Each structure stands twice: as structure tokens, then as C-alpha cells.
Length: 73
Image 1 (cartoon, rainbow, N blue to C red):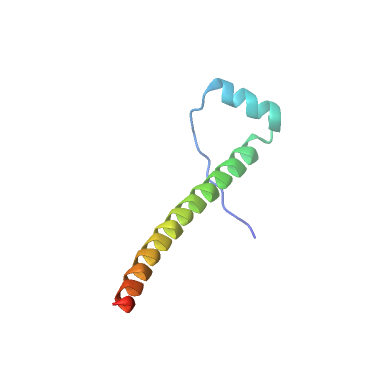
Image 2 (cartoon, rainbow, N blue to C red):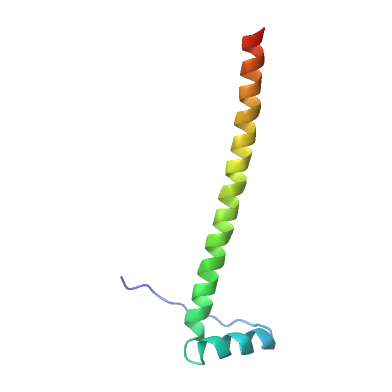
């Protein structure tokens, strides 16, 4: 699958650029940045999903308690 690419002009702290250039090498920085952004997006989506699941569990728990109380009457 051929994925289109867009060139970006971004500003980053010097120390950060030095660190990832040392890790990836000067010709592979774009791939390291793309991988890092993709990983961060995945982490953020997972955190949102965890929050939604926790909220759903809490709502279901409260609803279950209400039903049980009604049945006990």
C-alpha cells in the first residue's frame, strides 16, 4: 500500500533533535518521528477507550445496584 506523505516544517527543542538524530541517524529522522507520533496517537486513543470503559462500568454498576434494590423491595 502506497501511503501519501506531507512535508512539515516544525520547531523542536535542540536537545530533542540531537537525541533522536543520534538514535536514528541523520537520514532516518523522519521515520523515527512518524513512528513516535503514531505510537503517541495509539496511546492517547487507548487512554480514551480506557476512560470510556471505566465510565461505562461505573454506570452499569450503579444501574445494577438500582435494579437489585428494586427487586429486594
